[in-house]
Image (cartoon, rainbow, N blue to C red; front, top):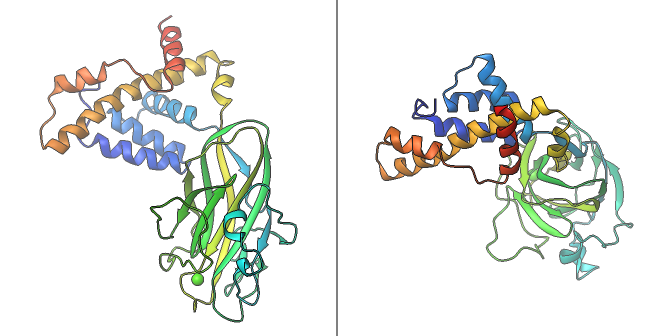
Length: 313
Ligand SMILES: [Ca+2]
């Protein structure tokens, strides 16, 4: 099965990962099935979907339409004029945002916070140059989360902070030095031509159980740009407890374990596909077979070995 995998399997794997990152589990399953060379029969798709289900269990942590604190001075001035530490503290957990305004986010092309275009909460176009607005949302989680995914619409660029640290930026210049103290004057990378699309931004961070603070700075692309907007902000992630919950359903565990085993083998083979492609070589079948038969060693090994044992009964 493995040695019959199509030569363009790596492309299917890539597309499956994109679909996974977007939460499109059915599409990812079809891609994985194609990558393994299983075809699109029900058994193949069931195996591939099992893999996706293990990775899914994605839960909404902060729903779109939540209440946010926002800060945007109507005279267009830098908040650091009145608080010199503003740019290194506004995203910190203990920052006092009680003087900021409260507003409710909303979904759709005319939702959210901003000015210039139809918006849910008008934060006011400054009387002079158009710059940056700031947002904070405090929330609590009952358990740990990983594989965090932030979704939002933005016009034009956004920097994202979680629990006092920058975790991502979208349509913003990338810094090489440590983040923090980003200037009020910092402009977005360019025009956000997809400004009403819901962007999905993976966050390289995890959440422990407890209280958290999500903070955003929203940057315009030019001081003369007459619109600024952010909307439909939501945070999702995998509840770390989901793997343990699967133990309550042995058949599901076996099915999913089989899928993980197959996919892990294929991923091993896929690495050699890529290496060989980089060298401009043709991959001999025996190399793929050898790679496919390597014991797995990824983070899911414990669950996978348990499945494999149980699956043989
Ligand atoms: Ca703009």
